[in-house]
Length: 342
Ligand SMILES: Cc1cc2nc3c(=O)[nH]c(=O)nc-3n(C[C@H](O)[C@H](O)[C@H](O)COP(=O)(O)OP(=O)(O)OC[C@H]3O[C@@H](n4cnc5c(N)ncnc54)[C@H](O)[C@@H]3O)c2cc1C
Ligand code: FES
Image (tube, rainbow, N blue to C red; front, side):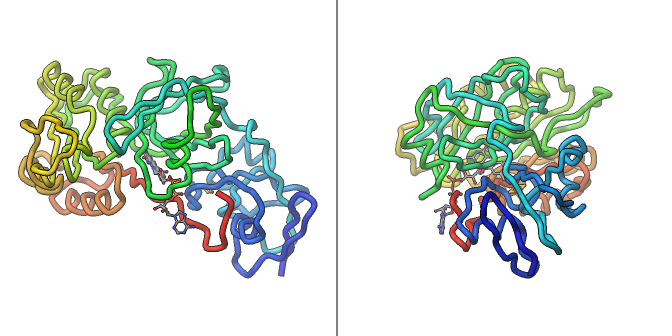
């Protein structure tokens, strides 16, 4: 079996085992999140050896030239050595500027960028990887446009026993430092030739974060076609930004905002529910959607993976072109069966 050298230790790789899995199995610290080549949290440097083409193809050429590769995609077939970049390398240092609740289960937090000259360009709607002071890395969608606000906004929901969200809800404080890598994802508004196509944005929970960024970007670009935004929750407590979105739709006649609540009678925080659409988000979309224009509609789907995959299928079957359906399923960080450190 090939050997993996890491720091001052050497480990045997199992057959078809990735460098990431081998390190986690041997209780070594390495940040990771998606395990799918998307978030780049698991970047490592191949020392005095070549990483496989498969593991390098996900990262830009300038990093490949320096020997960097993704540990979650690297399955060595001979002895190799890997080294971690320092957390500062390839990351932008940020600090928490503010933390507040958007609803009982969702925190909005705003980050100030400390390394302004290292800040990267991203398209509103893309996601980044955040690494907290404990070294826990997770992907989160940016809800605003840094170039306008000079800050970054995130909406994060509380996950039962979640490592990152648990830290955020229980311990995080203004001034805490987070390192950020990114950006990634193709869920963003593009309309170089100012076409007048309809846009459908649909999300459950904090899936609203990327959609809020995409919506504001489309409005800032004076999008001419109709825009329909569907945001779903089980109860009205699970919605947020209702007033902001109602106001936006009053100011933009082509914007139609549909807050959807599956159980409209059951609310705990006394929020006004008079304008919500009763029913699951899928039911409301099916009722309101104009199937006649679906062939030219750009569809953006974000949030719970089941919802995203189910709606992608439905939109495609009803006439949307697959190339016009952009998806951001909030896949859970897969828990290492071997007991990884993050
Ligand atoms: C592209 C993308 C964008 C995203 N954007 C957002 C966003 O904007 N907002 C947002 O809120 N989320 C977003 N997410 C989801 C986010 O990345 C995290 O998955 C989510 O916040 C949960 O992380 P956590 O560390 O709190 O939970 P984790 O620690 O990852 O736990 C996830 C689940 O696994 C369970 N679990 C944990 N440890 C164990 C164990 N040892 N054994 C068994 N089960 C265990 C937990 O109980 C929990 O249910 C996004 C995900 C992706 C992929
Ligand atoms: S790219 Fe390797 S864990 Fe995300």
